[in-house]
Amino acid sequence: MPAIEILQLEKTYSVGHLRKSKRVALKPFLLTVEEGEVFGYLGPNGAGKTTTLKLLMGLIAPTGGSARILGRDWRDPEMKRDIGFLPEQPYFYDYLTAEELLAYYAQLSGVAAGDIPQRIARVLDRVGMTANARVQLRKFSKGMLQRIGVAQAIIHDPKLVFLDEPMSGLDPMGRLEVRDLIQSLKDEGKTVFFSTHILSDAETLCDRVAVLNQGELRAVGVVADLTAEVGGKVEVVWQGAKAKPAIEALGGECHTTANLVRAVLAEKQLDPAIDAIRRAQERLISVTPVRATLEDYFLQKLGGGSKVIAGEVKA
Amino acid sequence: MSARIRHIAFNTFREAVRDRVLYNLVFFAVLMAGASILLGQISIDIERQVVVNLGLSAVSLFGVVIAIFIGIGLVAKEIERRTLYTVLARPVRRWEFIVGKFLGLVGTLVVNTFFMALGVFAALLYVARHFERGDLSVAVALYFIVLEFVVITALALLFSSFSSPLLSAVLTFALFIVGTFAEDLRGFAAMTHGAVRGIVTVMAYLMPNFAALNVISQSAHQQPIAGSLILYNTVYAVLYAGAALAGAVLIFERRNLK
Image 1 (tube, each protein chain N blue to C red):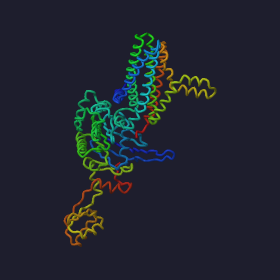
Image 2 (tube, rainbow over the protein chains, first blue to last red):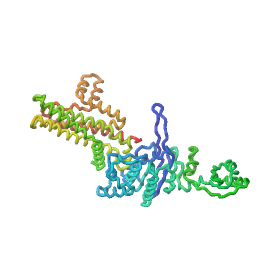
Image 3 (tube, chains in turn brown, red):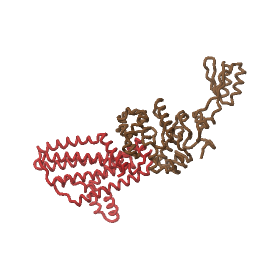
Image 4 (spheres, each protein chain N blue to C red):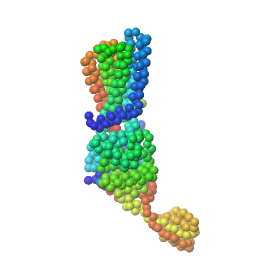
């Protein structure tokens, strides 16, 4: 059974007062996330990531389409016993202590009263907040609130966790801890669906990712498959500066250190570049293929506009 | 009542307490103590009437201000601060949230009124030296004041489900004022003629009747309050607040959270 099935969910807003016009926040698409997957939902700011999560949580109503979560209708309140949700830049009841907040959420999720204290102790330990259990949230820093946000999303031991920008506001140490936490949720067999625009996090954690841009699903797949499409770059290092203008003319970005020049250029420009170095009678030091990152994928595929990448969307 | 409604109501009560809403009791205590001591010295034979009038009016005023200003923020604040997201992502129905918030504030007002009532009775005992059977009407007047709070809280919730906090406050306060003169309004409606009469009468009866809930003057004069009025007012307040709450739920169920 898939954990999430997005079935042509669509959201359009009316904007303006007198002259109403439509603004499309999310265009219809099909997307399936399997149980046990860590699924990254990627896209630049304003791509429609948060809109999708709000639709799935029932916080906003779709203009069209539907979804199924854990095999049930996405609007079924009882299904929500088995899901956890961390909103983007969360804000919690700041008059409560961390312990009280988690107890409240556990109660609302239907956790048995007798189990609540030990659940709280366990999740606070998991997010490294045990020492702050009895501190009011109004005294918390942004990073601490984010940790409590993660804690409230898992307090009821859900099968599926939705995290909207979970690394936002965290320092490098905090990000590492959240990464470890997502990994440990996966190890426990839980499904994690998280949105992010920090691509290195997605590369490290995700089994698969979906790429969204301007409300449109642009690609779904394994990170390595997506980045392979934009690979084909090589790094060339040589000694001497005479070949530099020729290499730059081939589109290479040259950086000079002492008497070595380093250039990264498209793979198809490798032969002309080597020829240029030979002609200049300079010494070639190395040629290294450059592994593409998701960032390269974003820059190349999404940077130029909104052309649909045909055949990449798995229906 | 579902456990979820109970938890939401308790959290609303806890928020009000921690936001120091009950601090108004200190002002009330000072007011009652000052008034009793002062009245004991300047008024002859009417101390009791003045204490009851002043005390019950203050209970009503303090409560109405709390009901309006906290009532309008009950849902609006949760949407504004997005605390609602993590609540509605749980098996909480939207109507449960509205009812829970409503009961939480009504509970706060009941506790507040209880302590104020103790103050009123203490002042009464101070000036009259003993209680009489006629003082029971003070308890009934206090009960009616609580019913008034129930209706105002429901109205504040209704208005805040579709308008800004400021507009909600203005609308609720306007209805409170109009409702205070509900009997006069109904009288004016009866004086009109033709097609206008029907429309005006319906509108007059749609306004909340706070005049019927105000028996402060009778209780100050130790006049007994009819059991039928207690029953009528109870049913009226429950139905009116229920209708306002149902309206709030209907609007909130369809609302997109930004």
